[in-house]
Image (cartoon, rainbow, N blue to C red; front, side):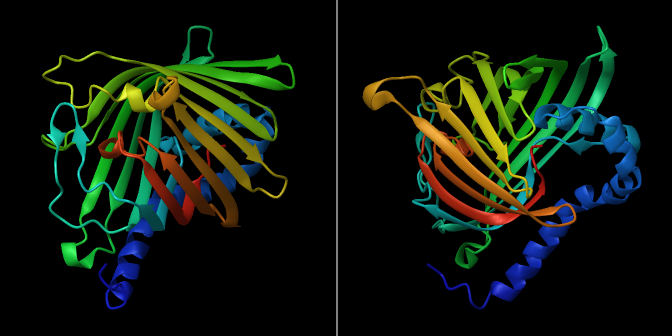
Length: 316
């Protein structure tokens, strides 16, 4: 493991530049949101987490006229990964040895935006959106290997959301959605990974907690074009999310996958997250991931990662 002492000042500068770049869009909305704050609160009649988030996105777009946050955006300057995947493999390409010696420490960051294309569809409660999410793993502390980007996943999607606001039991079924989703790492064979899915979504929440389920159908590909034919054996057929927000604005989240197989063939993956206020739009962020599919190159490699950094926007 190379020493980080001599390269730390330069690396800190790189991290600050990256953080400022990621924060620019979030902070660019800051003045707009501050000027419109009272009006946004007055107009937002929804009291559940999911409903309020849905209205907030629509209101923010009406004031900014540009992209608005989609999923969480964050930068994790400090992550520790147990057992980096030195030999990615898939049935399509077999095992492929990575020439560089991977470090356990990485920087992880995610960008995510969406833009409404059509609003007021059908009964007025349906919208068509274009979304884009990108997550990257950067071997920034790996000085001996020239600090390469180990993996970047690109995820454009076209999706419909239909607002329901229907009270059921102790919470509200806020909205449902349907999307066409493409995810790939943009790399040549033998490290190319990709899949296309039709994804449904339903969000059920109250003023303090929220649950969502995102079942999907993978669009079949020919065997000659399928980079990862066994991906469903590891990630299953749905994503499950749970979130709880405390009175002092701390947010705890769980995200999980299961392949719904029994015995030794069962594969379960989970992510725990905690965000807390630091001031303004910036929040502290702690994340722990254990399982498969954190990124596509590791879809069939068990990841055990602890991360610490900054969150630019929360889920709700």
